[in-house]
Image 1 (cartoon, rainbow, N blue to C red):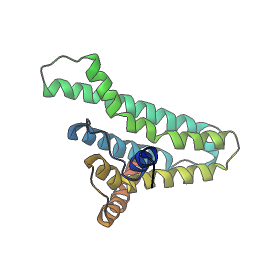
Image 2: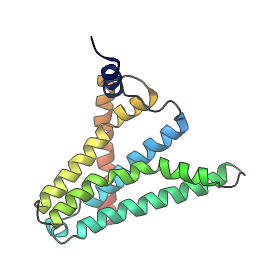
Image 3: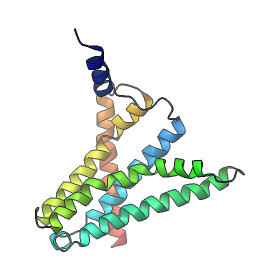
Length: 182
C-alpha cells in the first residue's frame, strides 16, 4: 500500500491538472500565447544557417525575437484591455498580462540554450537549429494535451492527432512567414 506522500506525488505526476483558480479566459490567453510564441520562434529559426549559430547571430535573433514578441504581446493585450472596459489598468492587471504572455518567453528557453551551445562550439550549428525546430514542432504537436490539461480532461488519441495536424498547420504558417518576409 502506498503512503499518503507517495499517492500525493503520483496524483501530481499522473493526474496533473491545471490550477483550479485559472479561468477559462486565462487558460485561452495562455494557450494563444503558447501557440503564437512557437510559430514566431519557428519562423525565426527556419532560415538560419550553421554560420549564424556559430557566430552567435542565431542566439541574438532567437532571444531578441522572444523578448520583443513577449513585450509586443503584453503591450497589445494592455491596449486591448482599454477597448474591452473603461476600467483603468492596475498593477494586478499588468502582472496578469505578463503571466498570460509567459508561454512566449518560455518557448525560447531551449532554443536559446541550443544556440548558446552552438556559439560556444559545443554543438554543431545545424544540430542546434534542427533540434530547435523539432522541439518547437513537438511543442505545437502537444498543444492538445496542454488544452486538455487546462480543461482538466483526459487526453485521447483524437487529441494527439489534432495536435499533429495543428503542428503541420503552424509549420505551414511559419514557412509562409519566412517565404514572404525574407
